Image (tube, rainbow, N blue to C red):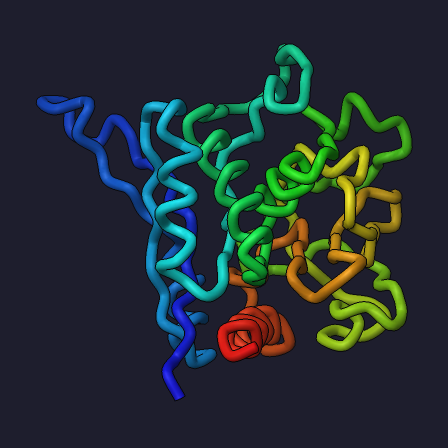
Length: 250
């Protein structure tokens, strides 16, 4: 049986070459790549065009190249993608990346291919399906009291999440999980076809899944930083590989 190809959307490492400031590499997280290999998939990285006008065509052309998609963490989601102007405490954004990922998510789901969203991934996926995010959870959500941008090392869990019974996430982690936390944006209005399957004790949304099928599983934390120290977190990568394999041969 041919191994499924699991794509990861790239980020862009700018300002690395002062002699050629426009010549910077596209990259994806090493820990995700290693987890996909270990889970039996073949990882590949999808770069995005700097010209947002090319985003739709690029996304459409790339979807046939993979069987499953991982949306990693990255910069803040540009609020203009969900109809807002930027607040003063918005972090770094990169509109070309947003534009490409929005198009890619829609094309991937239209093709019936599964997605795993991680941190920024849950946020951009929610926006692609008509939802939105808090530009800054601490100042916009009066009920939020947990320090979601953790100061502990990335692989340390720092707060708990409560998980919805009978969800895909529950099958992976059970009723409650101890997770890491490296974000200040968070899902606010939930997008069409999605349901909340985990929340932090302060009510911040920590996981989403698709309601009509198994195509979407997305979490606010970073299992790629945890799986080598907390083996239960490896299940996310086994799961995306298994879902990709199943839909590939459906």
